[in-house]
Structures are given as C-alpha cells and as structure tokens.
Length: 446
Image (cartoon, rainbow, N blue to C red; front, side, top):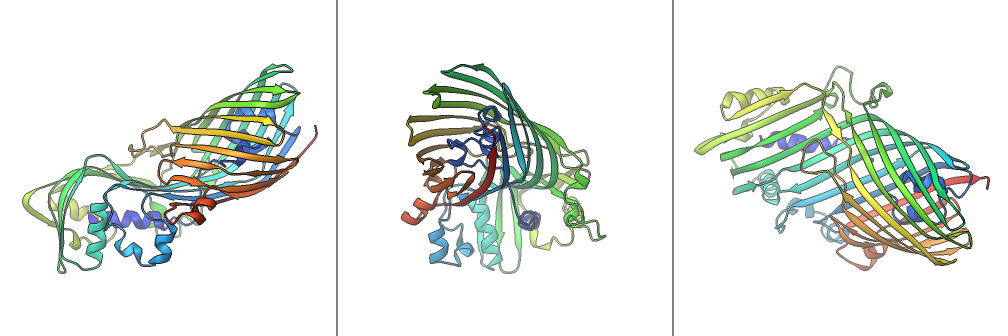
C-alpha cells in the first residue's frame, strides 16, 4: 500500500507543466475593463472600456504552501530530506497557473458578447498528514522507525488539467446617468486533459520501518486512487499523442454574475459585483482508472509493504491475495466537479487618480471529497494609483494556505506585469507564496 502511495506521488509529479485556474488579483479590479475583468465576473463584459476588446495572451503562475518559505530552501537545499520532521499540522500546497489564449469581447448598446479560450489545471496537496510523510521519508533513508498514523478525515493529493472555451453574454438591465445594473453569464465547453487523485480517509495504522523490511499493522481505513492509464501504457497510445482527446468536450460549466456601478460625473465612483463560478463537471474519459481500497489488518498481524512489486494490476493482485485488502474497481465514467466559488468585490474611486478595491472569494464545495476540485478561500485589498493609461497597484492578500502576502504590479493600457507576493517575499524571510502574472490586450472603438 505504501508503494501505491508513492506511485501516486510520481503520477502527479510526472504530469509535466501544471496550469490552473487562478484569478488575476489586482489586475482584475483595474479601472481599465477588459476580458480579464469579464472572466472574473461575466457581468463585467457590459463595462468594457472599448467597444471591442481583444486579449492576446496572459498568464499567471503561483505557488502557495504552509510549510516552506523560499528562504528555507535557499538556506538548506537539502530541506526536502527532512521536510516533515518539525511539522505538527497538516501540510497544504496549492499550485496555480493560468494561460489565457485569444479572447474577444464586443459591446452592442445594452448587450455584450465574448469568446474566450483558456487552459487550466490544479495541483494540490490537501491536509496531508506529516506523520505519514515522515514515515515515507525515514524509510527511504533506511532508518529504523515506528510511526502511529491517525487520519480522521480525507487527505488528498490531486492534479488535473483541462481546457475551456467560453461563450459570454451580458446585458444592462438598468442604465442611467447615475446607476448601471448588469447581469452576465459565461457558458464553458470543458475539454479534459489528465487527472490524478489520491485520497486517504479515516485511516489509522502502525507503520514499522527497519533496514530489512517495512510492515504495517493495526490498520483500518480507505484509499481512493484515480489516474489516467495513458501514463503507463507502452503501446504508443500514450498521453503525449492525444492529450486533449481529439478535442472532444467532456462537460459543461457556467459562471453567473451581477454588477452594479454608481457613477459620478459620468465616471465610475463605486463598482461592485457578485459572482458564482464553476458550476458544472466534466468526465475524464475511458482512459481514467479509479480504484477504492479498504484495509483491515488486525493488531498483532503484519503485512510487508516492501514486498509489493510490479505494475498497479500486479500490486492489486498481491494486496487481495493477502486477505487484508478489498478493492473496488470503478470502470464507469469518472466525473470531476469544478472548483465552485462564490466571489464578491467592490471598487471605490474617490478621486480620479486613486482607487481602492476589495475582493473576497469563498469555496462552496467540500475539498475533502475525492471528485471535487479545490479552490482557496481568500481576501485581497488593492490600492491603485491611476495616472492616465498608467496604473500601479499593490495587492495585499490573506490566503487560506500561505496567509498574508503583499505584491506590486504595473499596467499601461492593455499591458500588465506584477506579482501578488514580491513585497513580502523581499521583506520577510518566511513568505510562503511565490507568483508572477503578465498579459497583453488591445481595444478599439468608443
């Protein structure tokens, strides 16, 4: 069973470049409204600065964790060998990257429409037990060790990649010299790429490591393992040949939003919105394998983990033959629920050259369920200096995993570049977030 766990780590690590849903905090509350704003809240497509907005590209790369800072890695390059030694809380990590391809939005009086393309993925470690991690590391170092594991709720290691093609529509339902009220929706075709999940739920055991063997006793619990079998095929039908499964849609998603704007001298004075994002799910295709394991090893009976050998099917046969494990192979379509969130924001512009915005996001799905993708709870405060086409912004974020981070960014017209964590990364030795974002868009028409 331990090799199954390690194999799942390798499946996730071997997934290549991980790209994921990630909001462009700071940029998405810019006074210049473009397709980034419309993807934050589809109702914002009614507020495009130009009649036609074209997003040429944008990307955002971010890493959040609650364990290691960049300074820890710089001070001790071998820190990963003892990563779990001094940790007394569950380990959490979120890896986020977003690549937004060509996107276009158009305003037509009271109606607005848009088309977007985006590649997403997520790579998360959710509430990983440090005692289990320490047992794995100590065994790989050949040390003698006995570890008692008690995991009361599901812990997960999860990675997924997919592509979206979005169709946006919005309408102003109130438009006066002082007020504007808009609604919008983003209907998304989902193209699944690859998916892997390891979930260990209600698990307790005693793991005994020595130089000669590794055994497990007094063990009860369950394990979910889901993976794309194309990673292990050797017949040429591997994942590199057809990552996007002939661009066949695997599901539908939708974002819904509402936006209110209070104007002063025909300029936005207060802009606020509410959106619910990522309603929907996608099937991961016939190549997806899912197995649910149940373990029951009585006290004073032992099972040698280090004797497990071979591919996954051969390991399954060895587990069943031991009499301690039961396995349920699920051959039905594995459906993954998108990371559903509820978000709200307000932008306040008391003077022409200054804006301050507040953005809050709350996950509304249970990240402990194996088929649910995770999204972080967070709140972001962003003061912004506006000098014509030039904007300088500083997002300060309270993140569920990495806690408080502060960043800095610059925007000129449709070009932006910045980071949500560069200030705290330079000022603090214990910053646990690293990220960068950049993009270019172009608009024309009044």
